[in-house]
Image (cartoon, rainbow, N blue to C red; front, side, top):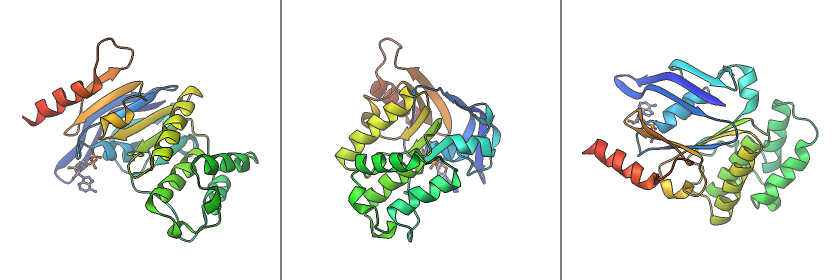
Amino acid sequence: MIEAAGVTKKYGKLTANDNISMTAHPGRITVLLGPNGAGKSTLIKSIVGLLRFEGKILINGVENKSIEAKKQLGYVPEMPAVYDLLTVYEHLEFIARAYELDGSWKEDAQTLLERFELSDKRDKLAKELSKGMQQKLSIACALIIKPKAVVLDEPLVGLDPHAIKELKLMMKELADSGAAVLVSTHMIDSMEDNWDSAYIMVKGKIAASVEREDDGHDLEKLFFDITEGAVG
Ligand code: ADP
């Protein structure tokens, strides 16, 4: 579970997140939608502990900056976060050691590399990979810890169709295994078939939230009603 309560983040005079409260529940894929500049990345960075903010964020009931929270939290940043001079496999080994994973990580690593078609790149340095391959490696690093909560910031941008399909399937599997999955995106159609709960952000605030079970909703229509209404 990822819970934000009264989160406010200011950059100088600009309020990028204005008193935001939201929850990503275990077993569900929660999408954070909003136009560019709405404040999604700022909220995500606060959730994963990269920014100081006012308010409170809990990961499975513990404060987000605690080691206990970090152990359970997977994070896929908007820009691939890789170490130029480590090989693909060394990245996974590094994470496995840092998180003190048990020996089964090696099988998980193999599976992740196969699913992302990176097996033949295992011994390549990250700097030798294409941007899309770096993104896939960055995702593999987040998932190898088997996170109980996972936050993905615009994860589908720059991926090839196979990787998009695999990643969407992985998000579903993570949710089905009981993890809370939070995905930020400005492209509604990319997640239209793959969400359970949605928050729509506009100008630093949550403008609406909707559950898939609710009858009669249309995410795209709701998005445009809200975002275009807000602009006009
Ligand atoms: P989104 O992810 O929805 O595109 P962001 O969270 O990146 O939105 O940005 C929200 C607002 O905060 C924007 O107006 C952006 O220009 C501003 N912003 C983001 N990061 C910084 C920063 N490091 N310093 C100053 N302003 C920032």
